[in-house]
Image (cartoon, rainbow, N blue to C red):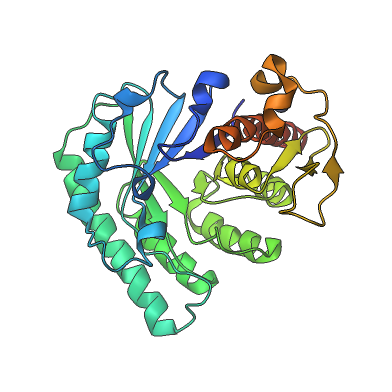
Length: 298
Ligand SMILES: [Zn+2]
């Protein structure tokens, strides 16, 4: 498999990597206690990415955060890691409702200033070779993304990523933005917050090889099940949450580690532990489907 799919993880989520070997995990600083450390993983994931949590912190002015503080926390969270560990700098996301040109540039400039500060901290930390730095490109159109991508590529990150796509729901808009970044820095880019299969297919066509998603858990929380080959989503029979979704009276045949143990487990609702088991099933199928699509495209 030559693409990386990172599953978003919070400390109340299942350890996907214990169920499905070779899983990559994306930990957001805003979703774990700041005292958390990877030694709490019973089994290490294949790769670990630690983002700054900026996307979730941004709407919460009570939580003061700055690049130095975020970086120190990322180091303590990943301390002792011997697996590939990607550390993202603190970016300043641009939600879809921000259109004011000055505000957008202010966010891009802050993102770049943080990126320079991050690189200084990162280099002076002399981390082991399994640690890699990730710069996050921000922008909300061709002009701002190109500008940020050009500046970001001068800073010397090991990898670059593109942010602020998670709340966009129009495939063409997402693809346009990714194209703007790819034009400047090439397709070796992680694209944050991808939920749709069709978006993933278009990204793979552009040469993108690294994405993440929180969708398996979101779908599970809405009491729905993902199946692959072909990709389908059903609500579980008695659920009232997604009224217009086709429903299942009983689980379909499935080779995921949860259904192999007991197919009825993915039909249970009412507790976080039930959501977790269903999320593993959903993750299993989304991952399979992405692998299939990646192979078709390449
Ligand atoms: Zn299953």
